[in-house]
Amino acid sequence: MRAPVTCDDLERVELSAANDVRGQRAVADLLHSWARRAVPGDSVSRGRLFVAASEHAAFAGDARRALRLAREALATGDHVAPDTRCYVVSALLVCGHLREAVALADEVLDSRRGDVEVHLQLGEEFSWHGLAEEASRIYTLGMFRCAGDEDAVEQLLGAWRRGRGPRTVDLRERVPAPSAPRD
Image 1 (spheres, helix red, strand yellow):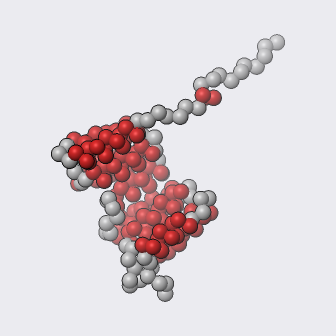
Image 2 (cartoon, one colour; image 1 turned 90 degrees about the vertical axis):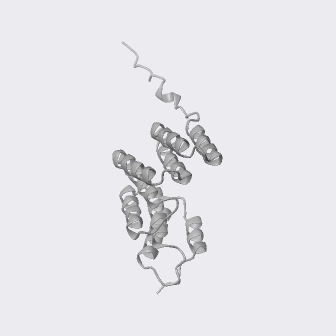
Image 3 (tube, helix red, strand yellow; image 1 turned 45 degrees about the vertical axis):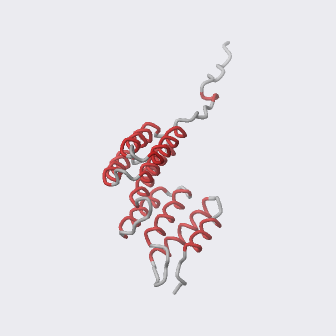
């Protein structure tokens, strides 16, 4: 039987992960094993462990596993801030399941109408995946819903502005390749 998992244990393991596929996969495996075999005294919920394992699986490039682990987190019934479903949306985006991600995001947004953290996380997820229009829609919706909370509106406006920042353009894609010499 293993020792109880603490927040410090989780942080230590995540920070020690190598930034290569093998290291990320190893951390995902360890966190997944901890989540499956909870012991009395664990101060980290199974849901949080599954979410962390999902994120490391995504970093390792294993999108399907990331989605499966995020769904396991949701199935535990544990609350992982700001909402466990946000991590499922993230994994759906990693898998390229845009329609399902948007539908679940809308479900989360409808049930957590004035929660600025939910709007921020979902907006950032869509922005991260290059879906600026969807991110903008989420931030704008959040600004309307949080209109009475000046701090929340400022946070959402700042996130929206950052998401609209200049994009790096690879000029090599715009320059036509030299044509072959003609005889």
